[in-house]
Image 1 (cartoon, rainbow, N blue to C red):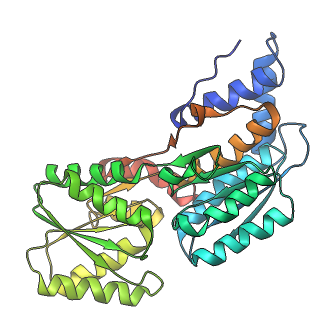
Image 2 (cartoon, one colour):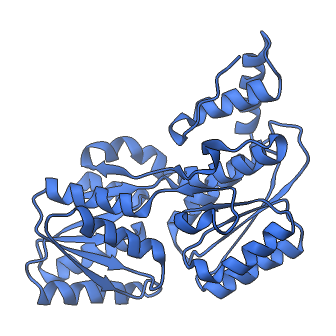
Length: 336
């Protein structure tokens, strides 16, 4: 019988084992049937015959954030494979996000996937979901609150550990003073990232709060800071869309600071390859969307839960110029 390995690095093995072993049992044709199901899923057709369940994802994303496009691609591909009707909604305002979740609860969806960027606003509505018997998986933000709020598990990166990875990389590059650019006030994950940088970096770190909904303001704020604080030698942005604004600000300010970022997209991969960016810390958003849908399906189908309810980590992975080139094919198709 195929052995099911846990962990996001074994995604292919998980899919093959679950589909081959859980659905068909141990047989000489199990492997062939699993391959057939995988091929069917790749054609956009369901690979299973379970009921047409409905899963809804509600995130704190603002408009135009490519990170969440990648999350949705992963979720939609898993939904096609698992015969799931996938719904998506988002709002950057915490109370509005909670209202969207409440709407899906009233619609009696079969599973919920939510982010907890501002967890206090989500506590009540997740209690309502639990009372209604709707299983919940949290992704991306809210690792510490996920279990307490009744979620089955959390999928994402530990934000403090991710920040520490940035601090370690800055040390390797002999940096002395970093500017950590936070683009959303009140987002606990953002605070934790900068906290992690401060925790491991031997140099000094200063936080800069900007309005992430206004990219010209982001660029102007970083530019002004670089003009007045000339000894900053590293600018760390907390999301891929803000990295390019930081590069433009650096150029306008005449600064020699290296620009580094959390998260990855096609633009970041190109900038890493060209040397415009120093490094990126990827949390693999495609996996967050894919695994969230797949885990909810596994739970409803077989009461399975990877990681025993503990967080399933999708990062951090440090991406440099040397590794960016091989990832460009994936970033160009919008899955990394």
